[in-house]
View 1: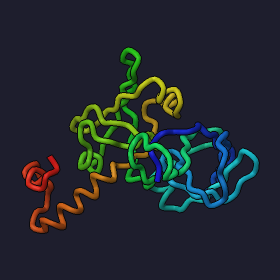
View 2: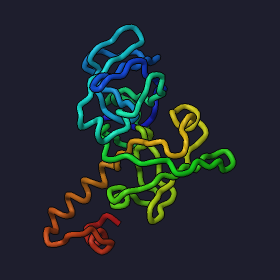
View 3: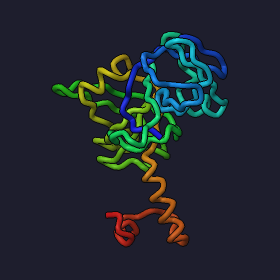
View 4: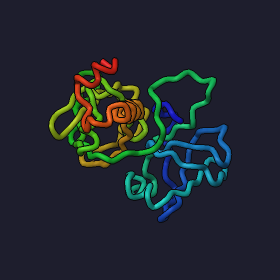
Length: 208
């Protein structure tokens, strides 16, 4: 379990079809620990000094941006949440739902407005002011259009994550807010005759 608060920008040092080695300044890590790499929950398989190695499955390669990383690519890193830690961000599982492409990066005063294309899955769950994890970063959706959505990023987040080197058309990992999916599951189980989640259904069950 993670919070979406990035702790370090690591650098890819070795990359193969199923193994990834990353250089990081993070400490207090041991073999078997879970680390979110661009939001993807991976298990540390070996440690050599500041170098962490991970194995990843073909499924992970298919549904995330892990497979398009290259040597020296920067990656967001976060260690798993400790139960005695403050909970910043939101609940992030590290299980990526889909990917999206950056369509615009706009500087607005001190802030950055970053837009992404959206597919059917994102449109199904995205709500204004709702949580979303993008490359493992806990963000809030600020705008939704027919085929896109946007987030507003503070300068600190932009500077301390891989977004300081992102470009338009880059692919990012998307994790939908897990609470939205659990809410949908509970409502559909309770109302098996309803195929869709409607505003009236949410009101009837006390969600809005």
